[in-house]
Length: 326
Ligand code: SF4
Image 1 (cartoon, rainbow, N blue to C red):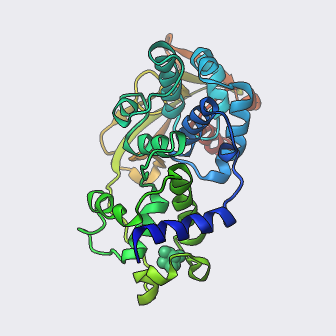
Image 2 (cartoon, rainbow, N blue to C red):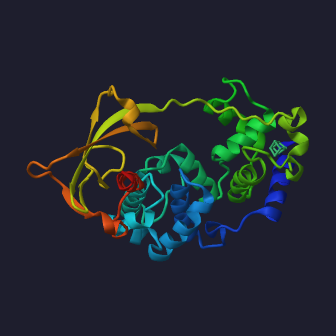
Image 3 (tube, helix red, strand yellow):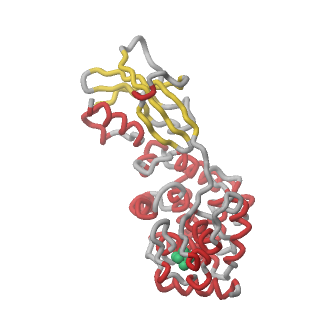
């Protein structure tokens, strides 16, 4: 089976089965670039189904790179509320400002220049090159990685490293319909070559697939260790009011409202800690109820009976919900 036949089979399947997604419609090149940029930032840590309403809302009110570059941060964050990983939206705005200043409000069309923009790593740069500019790049997301692992039945730890998967993506070939092809591969992984119970009998690659031949669909993931961190979180309360601070200290949830907290060493009574996972961190949070002594910089009182009227990260809302259960 040549690569070009494989490519044709995948595109044929895609043309018949693709989902209608708001960033996949036919647009002018300027809109295509902007919509690819926004959707790829949103999709970096979030599932397609969750992203769709956020994307529609975002582009309705922030229709282009210029308006994104100018929007006030507190307004912008509202459009991201609930998606989490807020550094993405801040980087998105910084990128828009650079594009306005240095690229006449357009995206650069080389991978090297794209990778210099805030929030655009190797994966997103490859996705923008393929989807936004129809260039023969294949962004290696979790879905495409799974298709490659299953096609070649890659299981050993040396076979499933990122470097080895990048080498092996050559088996997928390329197409002059590069934008469709990248999306077709992602779609195939998401809809057919699913993590559990792959739908092999609907898959265009069934005859080429080593995992199907072996009836072995187990996916081995490269182990990435999460870092354990320990924090002491202070709760200051006046009736229904709780004191929050604007976070300028930690790299996560930057500039968002959080309860005052500091990093501590591993406590003895760790079993009492609340656990959160943020980025590559296992957060273990000890909660202490404290009395206010003097002014706390960057702080404000939040009425816990009107939480919906504030822009708060999910992390802070979860702490409120924990306190509500106490
Ligand atoms: S045949 Fe099955 S396991 Fe192989 S690529 Fe297709 S869906 Fe995945």
